[in-house]
Every structure is written in structure tokens, then in C-alpha cells.
Image: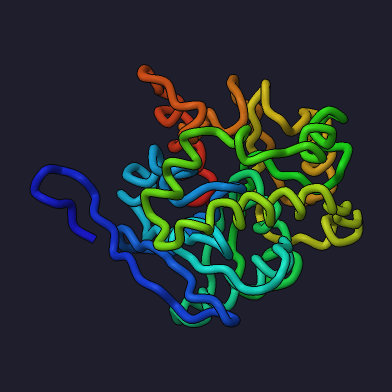
Length: 266
């Protein structure tokens, strides 16, 4: 898509019928497709708004919103990373894309893992931003927090972003409850499934991330064709995720070039 007169990159937003959902996606730029998959409780913009303009300079960005998130509706079913993976795979098929690169952040990274496991034929390269594959990949207090999670404790920026784009006023509570239930019931992805991933993989976490460095290193060792980057900062700070965004944000000055170098490798 061309830039608008004020220099702001304008997406082509559309809805696609996917497995009983009206799934929202935004398309920016031209070139090889890179699918962006947001984190839990998030929208396209809250996870990736800071990096889309740079990423879209050299490739086509297709950013999705998953079940119950943002502009995408809900189905009468609990969330699962496997179902999200199947939904994204169906979207890719409906958009007539044979193969794409995928960049998932947080819950979106776990979904990206499942895409690589369940739908390897559509995957070229994957970027896993703060991925969780095992319950021991986060400190024990994370699960204590999840067991007592309340919408009052959800970051205000995420609540505001949801209300800004969603047509459903009651959807915020539904999204919150579905996300919490999925995490409370999260089960480890078996080693053999992680080891089955053949796609070239870049794993990125922050040094003060929710995901532990030990977990990221364990995944790096299990995925044979993988690279690992540990960047100074908190969960998502390396891409300017909205709850970590600071006025002097500069991480994209080196993180985006690193991502592009990985994606451009032969």
C-alpha cells in the first residue's frame, strides 16, 4: 500500500471468513508475505504498531486479529493455540498465499509454533517473539497471577485499544476470560513436536522478559535450524509493544534490521 499524504502508512483492512469466524486482517506494503500474530489481550497495533512501518518497506505485511481479539468476532468455543494456528492457516489459504514467513509475539509466538508444527507446508521462516512452549518457561508466580487474574488488572492500554476497534462492547470481558482460561489450562508442547520444526527460526526475548532465558535457550537447542537473540528490556520492549513503549524508543533501530537480515537469508 502506498503511504498517505501525511506520511502515515495506511493499511488495507478486510474481513475473511475462516472456520466460522469473520477474521480481521490488515495488509501493508508489497513483496513476500510476512504474517504478524499479536499477543494475548492485544490488537494488531498494540503488539506491532511500532514496527509495521519499517517491516512494510521491503515486504508485504499481513497482520491478523485472532478469535475474540480486536475486530475479529468470537465463536462459542474456548481459545486454543492449535485452533488459532488452524485459523491463520485457513486465512493464508483464502488469501491464495502458498508460503509465507510468520512473526508471532507472546501468545502469538506460541500460535506460530503450532503453525510450524501443524501446517509446515505454508511456512518458510518463523520469528518467535517471547514464545512459551513449556509451563516451566515462566516463573512460578506467573501461574499464581493467572489463577487470580481479573479484568481490573489488565493493562489500561490494552483495554483502551480493544474498545477503540471492537464493535462489541461486551467482548472485552469475553476476550479476557478466554485468554486467562487458555493460559491456566496450558499444557507443555511435547519435545518431539518442537524438534519436528524444520523451518529456519529466530527466537527473540528480552533479558527482563516473562519468558526465562533458560526456556529460550532450551527451545533454541531443540529447533535445529534456529538462532537466538536476547535483547535488553522487558516483554515485548524489543518491538515497542504498547505497554512497554517509551518516548525515546529506539530498539527497532537494531531489532528490525536483525529481523530483516534473518528473513532475507537464502
